[in-house]
Length: 300
Image (cartoon, rainbow, N blue to C red):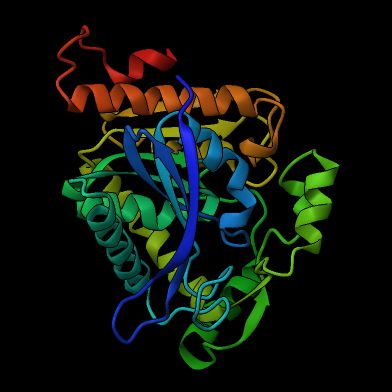
């Protein structure tokens, strides 16, 4: 069944905090609700096509720009403390649950967005149905030199507003699609510089995952491109496998690069995500008119 899609956009606000821009794709009729998070450079606009794909499969999607990114308010590429990312996400999820009148939502994150998504899921699982991470940037193949890392640590304390380009500053690493690369390079909303305070807090929220991932109690779907030029794939998968095995499904697409949604396998990727979410929804509803299926069975 293909569902109708209605578009909306706006801002989610928390008293005294920057307004967070969102774009939404409303499935009609709706099966469930997804909140999406983007990577360090990107924003909701990069993923409009695949958000519509999910809506046509019956999942209403809210894609939120991180504070200081995309069309959201806040100092560009800066954050005061990593806990603010989690507070913003809590605000977004509470707002979306209220708007859509649902108890739980599916959380989906691309690249850098996997860090706050997984951290949040470990701390407040009762608000979530599932977590999907697409090319989660937990360990990078190309990172700063030892000297640059030392400078970031120093500046985090003494010069937190100092800015530098993020470590993967060539969109050619993201996808083989030259048209997509050109569009990313020309996008005025792309975030290319962040403060050392941002990078210091990114390191802090990433390091916590070694401790937090074994505590997860919600199902996790992790998707990887087999030829990802951004991630250190073995080390990233080592970290993601700290999620309890009975809750984790890992899918790797041979020959695909970092941004799976821009690669040739996109239709297969989106169909498998939609199928996995549908199985989760059926389990949550008790699957009254169908045999019970484990979520992981879909991707074996």
